[in-house]
Image (tube, rainbow, N blue to C red; front, side, top):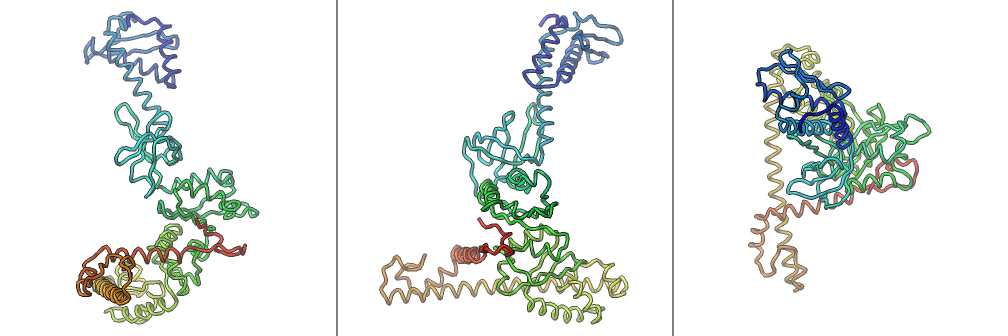
Length: 481
């Protein structure tokens, strides 16, 4: 490397700046640091060494406050060492620049090209860095193949040696938010605002929107003409269902909106518990709860209230049971029992988590009495839980027996009609005697699961909303695939 004249220093700085897109100032600092560390190797670690490169590219150095001869600084010091250190410093500077770039993009959406799948992760090239999309951050059921374009949000950025590790995600709610910003110009312009979001990736999202301009219908704008805008988002999310909810600051309005397509009769807000009791007609019950509880779960997340769905009759029954049950607790007067129920405490479980101060205030009770009440409630809640578990087991057993009996009867009927074997029920071998059948059916977990899958499929059909053509219809805000 020999001695470096000032022009050469500036040329190197300029070349690196252009080639690697690194700030000149950072390059100069890297060279200074490299020269200091090379000089240390020459003069020993104890030496107090300072080296500066001025704006003309001249190298000025001091050792223990004595000026260093620039020729000697760069020439006699092991030039090779300096060179290696410079390269390393520049790599670090490159890494830091990349890190800063992606650190700023956290939560933002980026697009890239799939390079390859490696076991539990997919590698995606973002142009200047290879990012990782781990299996756990991919939408369930989705697979990515090489050269496919993919969009994801930047989830995490780490420095890993001289490289930057960028981790992507397609399961976070931010991805839905960014897609809305991209597909719906009114959101980018700030006319429509996304007020809340709840997501179960691959299955369903609920997005609450509001409009700053009375003339712009926030739900209609997000759906787009013939649903084209929302369709683009659904396609990008592998067919995930998206419900667009009209936002309201009034929970009495927002909660029914969030539970669409189900129709809600009444919302009772129990502020002390942060719980909303939602009353629906019997025929709306399964729709409001949704498949495996998904509709109510997402609505609860969206509204930040714990939503419980029941019919008027169920509520009445719960209230009566709760008043009787609470009054039976030592230290609870009938009046206090009524007040508790009025605040939405409907089970021993609810009572076991009440704030002791609230209970003291409600019933003007002493700390001891309150502790005693909570203790009793906890014991009763435990009993109730065990009873419920036993009941669940009993029902499951009964279901198996019924199923086995039904299969045996089907078999008998098939034998009598001497039907060709392929129409026999799945898993039933013709010619087996009814008692062996019963045994195999009760011992077969898989069949119970099949039955559950069939009920799920039936639920799915019944819960698919029909979007009516009536403009005012509330179900218009549910966007079906």
